[in-house]
Length: 425
Ligand code: GLV
Ligand code: MN
Ligand code: MN
Picture 1 (cartoon, rainbow, N blue to C red):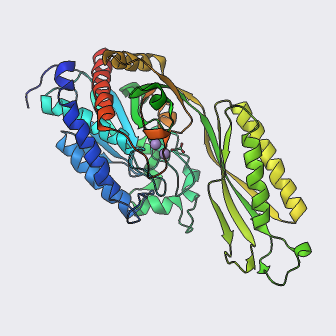
Picture 2 (picture 1 turned 180 degrees about the vertical axis):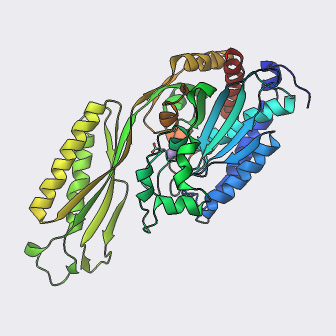
Picture 3 (picture 1 turned 90 degrees about the horizontal axis):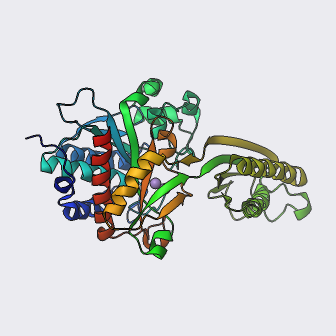
């Protein structure tokens, strides 16, 4: 391959075809799922591995060398111009795990946009002054272990080895799941990346909100990402016959859950910008004619201000204790790792703004209520994100929808952004 110097005209050529390829590949990845007719790709599963094999092939076709780290992230490396001594690296990332019954663009758009950006360079025979790495994170959603950002945490040096003992619904530990997925959990700390080698991190992601649609623009810049906390709460009462135990002497764990869920809604409504959700509830033994003896429920609580989050958590812990006392239930509260609110890097975001303006598009600023790997990556390198308009703001739902026209714009912006960052590097 002949090596040319970066010219944004050369890089931007063919963004329509590459965007069409992104859409086709999102459709193809959607077929790798635990459930026929639905998209469900949880950490460490055969479907996650099958989708990774596809991504690996596409990365190699785009001129990257690939490797898999201990937790199972796939990392494609596109070399810098060989004339550059000690080139730094720009990371373009995304995740390819999903929630249950997901849409096809959350996460995968970021990975496939990264691959498409490198494809553009490769097809044009262009090497930049910096290496590009496309990082496909194996777990961002945190569905299986109820802990988000597991894929990017090792890379950012933020993986706590105590997490290896966390269990999924089947009692399998994270450590066992990592081994089954081909990694060595004890070697995870060795995957941390050195800050000084990096220029920054960008993810292209669907907006998951309606603002871009309302403003009638295809893309927008992310000014920051909210902070979040997760927990798992257990109520233990006494299972028994639904026909024979008098109402007055029941220790029904599920009615405790009902009170808790309503408390979560009330607390979630108590402060501007606060959101609180119980998204999962398991009741045991789980039969219509048995009073529930035990329930396990999740809590997901988000706000950009740690004090607001802290107050809400304290109030909910009080509620849980009070419910336990009133209903003679044993209670247990387990905090999952929480994530700090994360502003985008102003310099990197400035470069992204210029790339958007170059397309003749007004720059719309968005704050993300959803979590993203940029939160962990920000601890080692400057981060920014480009959001792409999604229909009616719907996500975490099979109705997620984007257009090839908007992806074409996003890709042109990403091409220009990558070339600018590498040139400044
Ligand atoms: C990921 O989508 C999250 O915000 O939980
Ligand atoms: Mn998501
Ligand atoms: Mn996502």
